Every structure is written in C-alpha cells, then in structure tokens.
Length: 582
Ligand code: ATP
Ligand code: MG
Image (cartoon, rainbow, N blue to C red; front, side, top):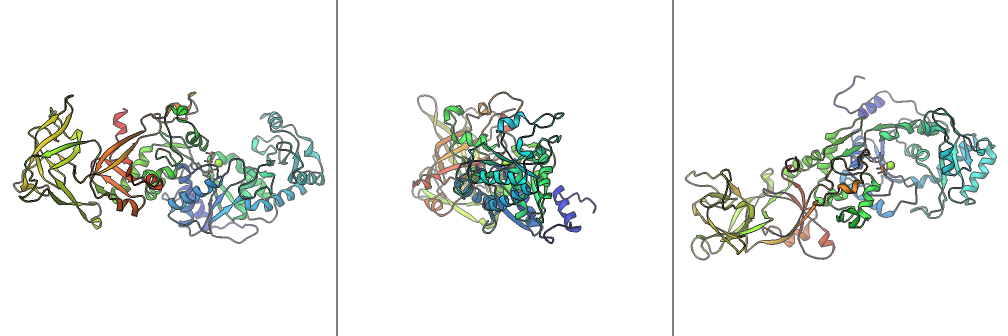
C-alpha cells in the first residue's frame, strides 16, 4: 500500500493491518482496539492528553474499541482519588462517557497468576532469592553475563511450590521474586531474566489483602492488552527496548490473543515539568520549599494537568486541536507552550462571550453628561455585541452613566506622540458608547491620578460620528454605579526557564519556579452582565474581557459556599511573553 502523507505512521500501520489482516491465534480478526493505560498514582497531564487523543481518536476513526485501563499493579502509590480524577479528565477531554469502557488490571490478577504458573511449568520462570541490590550487582556488563541465582536450575515442581509459598505470604517483602528464564547474556538488559512478580504486603485499592505478590509492568502489560483484545498497543519511545520482552511473554503462552506494541514520541512542553513525581512534589511541598510559591493543588491553573487546564478555562476542543496539530512522530522533541496557548486563543476567539472589565480602575467623569432630565435620567443602556465571531450570541444592554471606570493606563497626562488613548485635548471612542474628549485630571497629594475628566458628544451615540470624524483609539469602560466587584487572578508560566528539568542542569527544577506566576487583583470592576445568576447557573463560563484576555469563572468560591466572583485568566489576547523576556 503506498504511503499516504496525510496519515501518521500509526494510522499507516493500522491501514496496512486492515488491508492485510494478520493470521492471529485464538481469535478471528477483531475491530481495531486501543487503550489508554494510566497508573492511578497521580493526575493526568498534557502528555497524557496526547496519548488519550491518539488512542481514543484511532478507535473513533476506525470504528473500533477503546478501553480506559487502570494499570493498578503497584498498590503502594495508588489511590482511589486518582482513579476518580482520571475518569473525570478523560471524559472531559474526549467529551464521551467512559461507562462500559473502564477496566482494571487488578481484575486480571487471577488470570495473570495462572499464566505465571504456566511459564513455571514450562521451565520458563523461576523463584529467585536474590535481593534487589544483589540482582543489580549480579546483572553483569555488556560483555559479562548475569550471575544466575540457585532457583534458575530448580525443577518446575520446586519453583511452583516456592511461587505458591510466595503467593501465600510465606516470605517477607523483597525476600523472593519470580523471574523469567530468558537469557543471562542478552545485550538487551531487559531480557536478562527480568522480574515478573515481587512481594508487597500492602493492601490494594480494589483487591484489599487478597494478594501479597504483584506483577511487574513488563509482565503485566502485554497480558492486559491480550485479555482486552487490543490490536494496537501504543506507548512512548522509552518502551522500545521492552518490546522484545513484551513479545517474549506473549510468544510463550499458549493460545492467547496476540496484541502488538508500537512506540511514539512522548510530548514535552516548554516552561513546565511533566513527571508525576515532580508534579506531586509541587502539590505537596510547603511554599517555603518552592521559593514561597504555593501551588494550590493538582488543579492549580498553572499546573500542566488536565484539571488545571480545565480550571484555567481551556476548552477540551482547544486541547484536542493542539494534540492534532503537534502530530504523532517517532522522535522526541519539545513543543513550545505558545502552540498550546494559541490553540486556546483560537478556540476561545470563536466561542467566548465578550464583556467589559476594568482590572486597574480609575474614574472617568463625563462633565457634560446629564445626571437627570435631558436625554436620559442618569443611566442609559447601550447595545453591545456578545461575540462578533458568532452573531447567534446576540447583543446585550450595558448601562452607561456620568461616572465610569477605565483602565488607569488608558490615561496619560503627558503622552508621547503615538499614544491614542486619553490625554488632555484628545478624543477617543468609548466602546459601544460615545466619543469623549479628555479635559484633564484630578490628583491626590502624592500626584497620583484619581479622576480623569472629559466631555462627550451626544451625537456619537453607539460610537459613530455622524460627521465622519475619526478617532484613533477605542477604550473599554464600566459604569461606576453599576459595576460588579470581582477578584481576578492573572496566571503566568509556572517556570522561568524553558526546560526547568533539563538533565544537563545540576540545579533543582524548583529553583526555576516563577515567583510572579500568580498576580491577584482584588478589586476589578466588571459590567453587570456578570450576575449572581450567571454564577449560580453554569459552570465553566468563559469570556473575553475586551482588550485584555480570556477569562473564566473559578468555581472554588462557590464550592466553598461563598458568592465571591473570582475570574482566572485563561490566556492573554496575544503572546506578550516573547516581548517581555527577550
Ligand atoms: P511517570 O510520570 O511516572 O513517568 P507516566 O507519565 O508514564 O508516569 P502512566 O500513568 O504510566 O504515567 O501513563 C499512561 C500513558 O500515558 C502511558 O501509555 C504513557 O506512555 C502515556 N504518557 C505519559 N506521559 C506522556 C507524554 N509526556 N507524552 C505522551 N504520552 C505520555
Ligand atoms: Mg508510566
């Protein structure tokens, strides 16, 4: 079949498979089946998102099956909290319920155990009495084979007896292991009699005390794939050297479904870390250990976790589009986080409702605006467009009055030439409202501007001048009398260094935490379209604050039972980082 440029290399493999189905033992050709196999020992991050999009996407594209399989073979680090968060995140990202698709590797422990006995009976596995340290010391070098342990030459009957004793709790943690009898001299160290089972007297989150021996990843993974009739078991490149072992186990068991493993490049992203161990460390460490920085949890909006993204206002569509854009390759690389942010901007530009919000307010007084009588009696309601990208989102009425809030930096007393905002003598447009001409300002005793003054032209209602007069600048505003108070949290990159955990760098990655990654604005002023109603009705409300960025309502105050409005900045309108840190 000719290579198709539009297919990634895994799709190409699948299309070849469909065109020329393999003669597989134990079952007829089944639908394409993929799985996402997280270990429930942490929350999912953007790297996992890539794997989910790939595996789930393939099952959709080829009308196949998908399983969300918890690889829960290590009871010491696993918790139910992680299982629940993972299900939630996968459902959010894929937009589909995982009902009927969830599996647990631990449900296969009986079957795996039976297969282990099969290998022992065939003389292909034995019980070893070396400790892990001894095993390491005995593993040999590329030129020198591994030193075998006594069990390697025991009879299958004796090994079976010992293995059953292991299972029955007759040995302590670390005293014995079950190992595959493969090749003491293999140039691939994974094949030098790898461990299949170890003793761990730790209760399991689903199995309780039923087991005190637990299967190792390399032994378990292919069996899990086989039980689920996975056709394409896709994992990251580090497992390439484990594939011979994956194949060896499956090849030596009788009459089982034969899956195949394929490897793709893992995703790395700039300005963040992705190892679960490090993310856990950030979540659990006291602020003092992180340069005073306090990551509030796995869902802190600065974390590269799926739940962090969700809380920050990223959409599942944006994350999926990003994963599609970066593609699937066979070599590792680091993707610029700007790509992810651009995917978020692109999606939110289409969907986010526009609102006016002033983050750093100063009063703007329209001296000739009538307070009562005249054309209006203090307040008028002006029509504003909710989303220029989507006319179906309609319009809203925004209250306008004599005293407004504007951004402090939209006024300058002594402005340079190309400053098109408010400065004495200059006319600007108030978005959706009127042309106003700045007349001056009032300052406090320290010289800080506390009020800007202007006059308006009633003929320019709606922001257009009937005489065709043009203005260079348009600024946003909020009516002071009607403004709603909110807290706004501005997030920046969690790290100041592009690759904070670069293995070449001796410094600890935590030294590169960005101390300015969160700025809290306590007293932002929002137009009253943000009502308690909005707040109570819907989750994940996402907005564009005009001229500022994309924001979403944070649900944590509501969860805590208060009515405080808190907005998280999802992403700025443009990438300002590139300029600032040049
Ligand atoms: P750790 O951070 O401890 O190395 P892990 O990220 O490998 O753990 P798993 O729960 O084993 O965590 O991962 C589940 C699946 O997600 C695996 O199939 C793995 O290959 C894939 N995966 C993990 N990290 C990435 C990544 N950065 N890019 C692409 N896929 C990933
Ligand atoms: Mg892993």
